[in-house]
Image: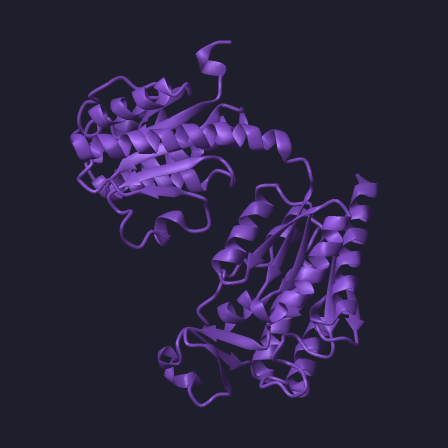
Length: 412
């Protein structure tokens, strides 16, 4: 088999400024028995070493040219175009079975380029970023993807005893990840169900998970903290999910009401867009999530508050907010192209929304439920007299999802 047709680690670097460092990394990965393709994402000076994929190819992939980029001499614009080209290129090559992993090196610019490309790839594809930004806030770079970041300690420009040690470890990590990923692909044969959970909906999801696992599914549970919902939506878009048990939709609340755990405006859309069977409920929609009580915005300080722990403060949603939440949830469900059902637990939507608990508010629940009823379109609606954490509700939710998955399989 020709080297060009084999899966390889794509090593992204600006070869005008990081040529020697990229060559060192390439050689360490190759010594570990893993093929490497060197991708030049630079644009200014002449490349110090020869790339397998040139900078001209990268910018062409982005819809521009190296000549155009160099004529404008705008470094920020060059980084933006290089990131777009690298992301498009690795996606296209991954679809052709050519990418076994992505490793990149750089400062803020190289990290922007490298992690943009990594975030474009599915979860499970090995991703390593050696970055001078790794010791700070990495969320803007990592977001909802499985990117490992190495702190080089010293500046990346130049090889010395510290950078060589870090680069060697990063190369070893990448080689090990590639081998582990290949072995994992041989074992991962169960269809996947994604489920959403919060502490206040744990009994429901745990019981439903047991039923789904007994039926032969692997259940991935996502904590509905914003990043959890984003990660789940990304996996659904990647085509990795057979069904969705979206019990806990509290992230919609924070997006609409100003809480801190929003997963963005597109939460609850991927499964519908992809036609994936889904069961949707209203878990934890009785609360807006904030951090410690002293961080509460002024407009929430006179509301009904429950301090879940020293770092988590919950604000009870009002009937007016529940009307918006129910409408948003139902409207998104109504747009689904695949089998979808909404299940309403009429006796309460969280552990603290039931008789004797601080957020018990039947009137507010009823406004939420009415909004769902009014805006669900033709989506199946199942109303159950139980609380969301009652075993009967969890069983009904799991069995409904199994039925929807079965109905879709019968149509295929």
